[in-house]
Structure formats: structure tokens, C-alpha cells
Image 1 (cartoon, rainbow, N blue to C red):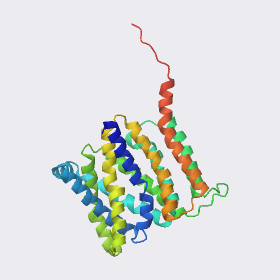
Image 2: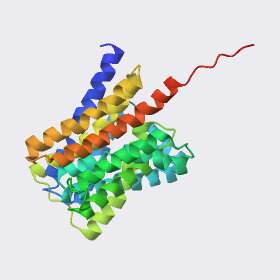
Image 3: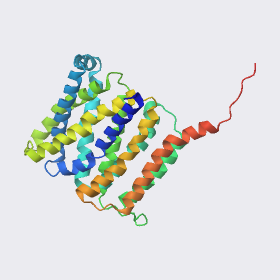
Image 4: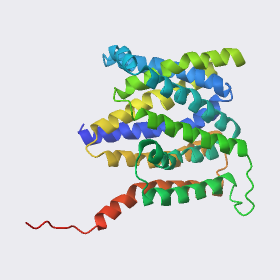
Length: 305
């Protein structure tokens, strides 16, 4: 298989799997509390990544990378999987899947805004325009189209979604300091977080009851939200001749996710959700396209000797 075709296959596989996880969250949360699901999924993801690194003969890198930056992995582990997935699963527990899914996509808008003060990056006009459009879309979704009344059906769920996007952005900003193998780094974050997740679970709740259905649901979340899919996406980016062509595949994910939510969960997709999600996707596209259009329109200045 040609490199471009192989990259596309990896990328499409990752996107298809990610498109199912919103539905999988809702199903898994019928068997587990949000904290129990974080516990089960983190264990499954850790075992999966251990197997992958073993097959790649990279297990010695675990101690090397951790010894070099232990505080970094403590930070990333607390941000994700611990806090981020706890907040995300709680949001999915109390919101319709279509709302939680749509609002979670705003992390792509928030990340460049947070990068301005935290990474000393410049604020682009494209980021401001994208943020205005995206967060108008958020209002449409959160109010179920009743923007004039500004009535929020579930303010706690909306707040949890925003908290989740903030935690996810902080995780990636902290990750910019990590120069190690990304799969090793991901596993280290899980291994560091797991004792904290376990301690919180046994001190506040009970260990989950693992029926066959519950185990399958938790395993699916662990494999295809946190584990295998991440590795597939890395392989897609690594083998791609043009990263942009692979990155654009992510825009398929929310559309496919809505189909799974409607068909499998039986949720009636609200027009306000579709309109708001459309605005968020438009904002993400503009965020990528506007800077390139601006550069393309700049006149070329010829140097004269």
C-alpha cells in the first residue's frame, strides 16, 4: 500500500472509532458511575498501551522518560485521564449525548486562545472570528435554540463541558514541554493517574460490579477512546505526506457521531444541535483556512540588488 493510502487508512480508522465513543460513553454509563468508568477505562488503556509498546520494543523508554521528567507526567496524569475524563463522563451522564459531543468540540477553539498567555503565542484575527462563531453555536445548543430567553436546560452539564474543554486544552499545553515518545508519554500519564483514581474510588464509592456487558462497555471505551485510536492517529500523521489532508478527516467525526447517537441511542437530534454544531465546525474550518488565505493574498516583494 502506498504511503498516502496507508496514512489515509490509519486516519480514517481512527476517525471512525472516535465517532463511536460518544455512544459508547452513554452505554457504559448505564453500568458505571463516571468515576468507575474512568477507573476501568484507564486500566484497559494502560494494558493496551503496554502491549503496543512491548511489541515495539519500547518498554525501556518508560523508566527513561519518567526519570527525566517525573513532575511533567504527574501534571499530565492529573489533567488526563484523571480530571478530564471524570468531568467528561459526568457531563455525558447528565446531558444528552448530542449536546455533550457538540460542546466538547469547542476545545479546538479554546486551545489557541489559551496558548496566547500560556505559550506566548500571537493572537490571530482568525482565532477571534472562530471563537465568536463557535461560542454563538454553543449558545444555540445550550439554549436549544431559545437564544432570546437565554434559558439553559442543564447549566451544570454545560458547565462541566466547558470545564472539560479547559482541562483538555491545559493537558495539551503542558504536553508541549514533552519531547519524548508520545505513546510512552500517554502510558506514563495513565500509570501516574491510576493510583489517584483508585484511591478516590475506594474512598468515595465502591469498586464496579463487572458483569459481561459492563466489562465489554468499559473495555470498548478504554480501547477506542484512550488507547488504540490514539496510536492509529499518530501512525496516520507519521506516514502522511501532507498532514493537513489527514487532519481534515476529523471533521467527519461529529457527523458520523450524530448518526450513531440517533440510530443506536435513539436520541432525536434537535435542529438547534445541528445548527450549533454546524457553527462550531465552520469556526474550526475558518480557524484553519483564514490564515492561509491571508498569506496567499499578501503581495510578493521582489528583492533588488
